[in-house]
Amino acid sequence: MSEAQCLFCRIASGEIPATVVFEDEHVLAFRDIDPKAPTHILVIPRNHVTSLATAQAGHGDLLGRILLTAAELARAEGIAENGYRTVLNTGADGGQSVHHLHLHLLGGRAMGWPPG
Ligand code: 5GP
Ligand code: ZN
View (spheres, rainbow, N blue to C red):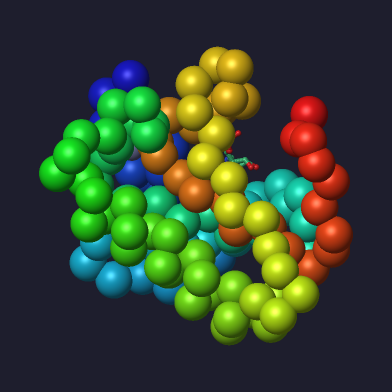
């Protein structure tokens, strides 16, 4: 799929609306359209990266920013104290349905383990 057709590239460019909760020049965070927990936010790189499996060593700073953005948003959402789940679904067996790297921030309820 070309980046022009990528759903999350289109959200990052503003072409498709989303409820954005944070953005800077590197990352964008917005609420999941079908939330699986009281707080369900997706944190993505602005520039297209298909998945963790295709990330390169040069993406290290970006991946760190994505994780730290999730931690900051967890504080802002009031879920940091009780805890939360951060998830990167990768590829078919990982359950990835949108092929633009995204970190799920889930919280506001207790999570089960192991995941399905
Ligand atoms: P994945 O299954 O790839 O790990 O996660 C993709 C996530 O994107 C799902 O949780 C799904 O609900 C969410 N999603 C799919 N389409 C849209 C959309 O158009 N807008 C928003 N905000 N979230 C979406
Ligand atoms: Zn993309």
